[in-house]
Length: 226
Image (cartoon, rainbow, N blue to C red):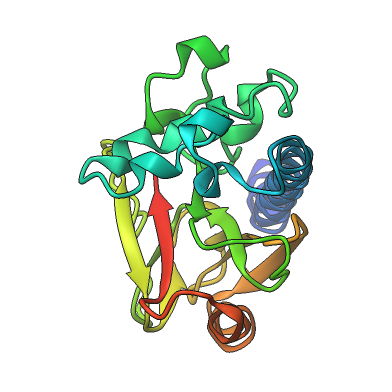
């Protein structure tokens, strides 16, 4: 009887403790991801200052960027180049390109990046630091519509990438930081390099509306996913 009571007590304790530990772990991963974004945002600003006030997607190859490649049909396979070109500004640390809540693993060196499978973050092609409400990047688990995808939304598992024009609503998938939030949530980086946490609703109602209002392209906002 005493053994039964102890077992029941331990099981009950586990029901309270384990979810708490899981929440703490998810929170820690999200904080780490936000820190990654802040480092990436700082790298963008430093790179921009050294390249005529342009981000890599706005600078030609002759000026260290890759805007020349954006019209190619295979541009999505080149997304990793965006970060390799900023490797010095990123402190030669490719680990910050992968969210700890993602299933992907970082490369051990920028020379060993094998493609988009070493990346967790999409980029906003139309972002500009003079448009602080534009979207410079975000977690890759974003998808179309209002129903969260169970996988990674626009970002294919094989890393072939996806070039998307955003004109309608989007929502975070149930991967990465959406643990415990069935409507989805994630992190975004704005045109001035600052970072925000956003639910799917907040992303659409607050950030995307503001980004559209300042967009310079009538075609819509262009995001490239790893």
